[in-house]
Image 1 (cartoon, rainbow, N blue to C red):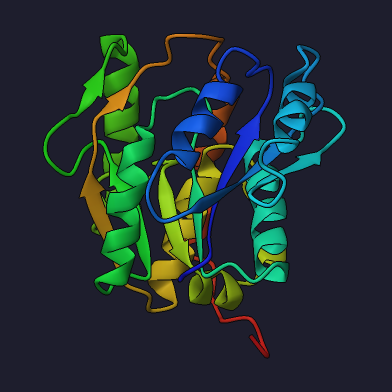
Image 2 (cartoon, helix red, strand yellow; image 1 turned 30 degrees about the horizontal axis):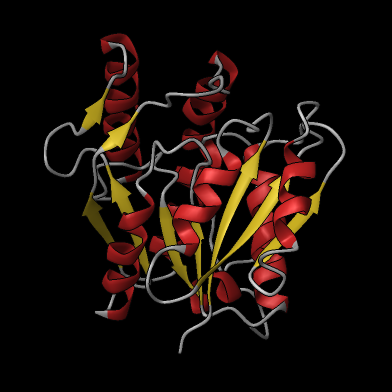
Length: 242
């Protein structure tokens, strides 16, 4: 059976973390979970530690000091996953904006031939629930901007619900990934695409969080906007000896 790891970065997700972990473990196929907590003052990490007694083989925790950015959390998780022999590695939010049941669909897309599958909000119109219209427009047109500049035919370039095959993460030189916020999502997809991997969008319904506080900020979008221009002219090569 393939070893599958779901990486969930957290900062102040006490209200969600136990329920999201249980929902992942309730799925068929034995998914493991790695929580990467950036020093949440609300005790998120302590809750995860309490759960590890019940799930000692499948629930893992990495604690970091302070908020270091979404991209660095995932890069840390990717390296940990490779070191521990996982075949498929997933990105997912802690707040139920991504339906855990859709992990099965992302996994199937990779089993059926994709190297990287993307839970897409925009490949079948707009599938977003309970977001303010202004935020939907910013996100939707940001993906359109990325598609135009990078010429990559992906409708949801900033999506954070993704399945990577091990081969993709072994090939990309993770130490050269530059963007730290939501631009990280664009950079990883574009790098995989430039290296010749097959990307496939899987339509999902994205639901705004019901508990906790959003971590979005204007700086996140600024990094993505300017970073994309740099990506367009950057050379890409596979990591040596992967």
